[in-house]
Length: 182
Ligand code: OFO
Image (cartoon, rainbow, N blue to C red; front, side, top):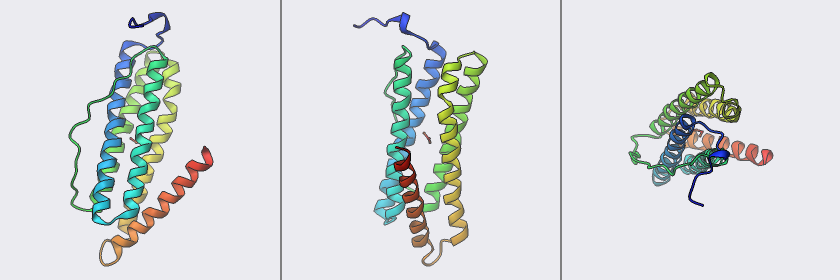
């Protein structure tokens, strides 16, 4: 069946385009966090690395959620081209600064789509995106919390080792919370 069944379409072309752009961002999140995880692993930050590997999987999950939504609504979700992935970092702090910066960017993008849906009376997509609004709030505050750990503990001496341990605790709490939700 190669022809698109337009009677099944409930998505406007504009919202389909915006959601496909969001897919690119989620794919970029997943690829960026995978790259960060690998760098952390080569530098001996085992807990930060595990945290970021898991986070990369989560972001792929977000991307797939949008794939399902677009296709179920009669659109066509597109596998994104992912380019410009950073592979090297000057410090562990830089990794998490980049995470926060990226998440802020993703939040902005979600808010713009939500705003578009509301003003164009696409209440279905508006409602669907509420999950992402909540998720972004949680992810931003998680990234901020991790950066606070750097400030509280300090990076000298055993500081970085301790920070990595603390990230491990956050990671374990996250995994437990995700398990409880499932
Ligand atoms: Fe997809 O939640 Fe962050 O980017």
